[in-house]
Length: 220
Image (cartoon, rainbow, N blue to C red; front, side):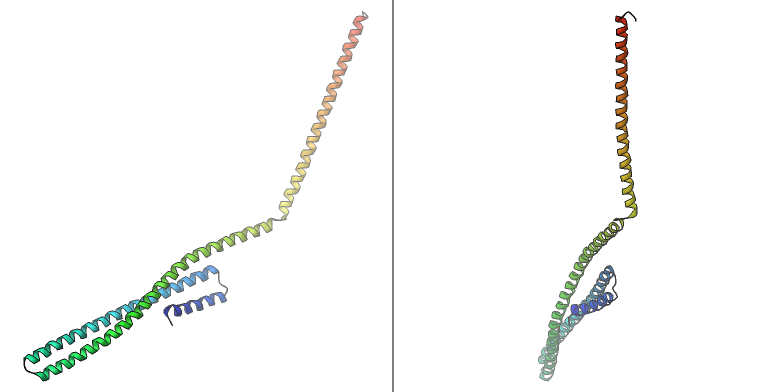
């Protein structure tokens, strides 16, 4: 099982528990990110340990190669001294040191491949966390938008057919009726005034005609 597989199982277990308890979506997203960041911390520790182990294996290879070189020098010195027996023993020890160096080289090669896989998984996890952070912001923004729309819908539902609004509409209808009546009375009052003025004008004309006739008859 890879590091990401193991981390994925852990995160799914935590999230399934939150979903089972019907937790708030924001809390679920926060927990998911916390789990991923905790997994990232663990992954970095594993990579650091793998890199340290790689350094140790490199030192083992270097140490045994140096040891082999020393035994070769001793074999040469033994030959110069005419001691072939000692030279053979030195060469045997040289071969053993070289065999160990080769063995550690094999382990080092395998370990480097493992470390590279761990590094790849670590980078993938870091990328997933960055993506999750961005998606979390988007999802929370959408959640707030839905909540705001729902709040408006509930408010509109409460206001629709509300007695207070009906009272305002009734009062508006009454005021409009009063305004119409007032305008009608004003119009009637204007007509009455015009009639009175017309009657007064007629009376004055009659008086003038009466005076004219009296003057003609010499009564004025």
